[in-house]
Length: 109
Image (cartoon, rainbow, N blue to C red):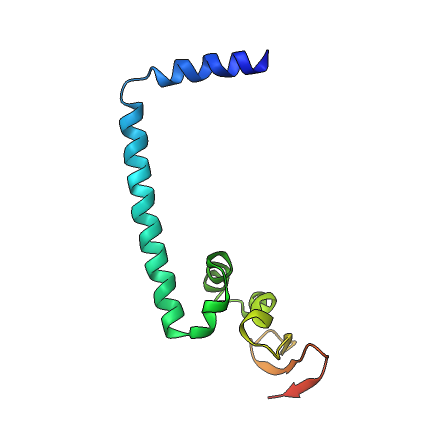
């Protein structure tokens, strides 16, 4: 019964004049935005090649969290093979004191 109601609603919506043209314009605009985003991410990867190890979603997350470097930690092991996490200043000054390897070895900076 639910499928019949949904089908009727779809038929009512698709009768709206200009809907197809509006959807085509939306798809074109989305393609333009996606091309721009891909070009932007490619530029970031070209400036720091380790970003090639990250997906677009992961890279966007890193770029959006530039003011809080602690939120980048989940992506460290993908960018740097021997680095698991960083030790930050407890006073939240964003200073990094050292790093931990996957084997929990500590290296002070």
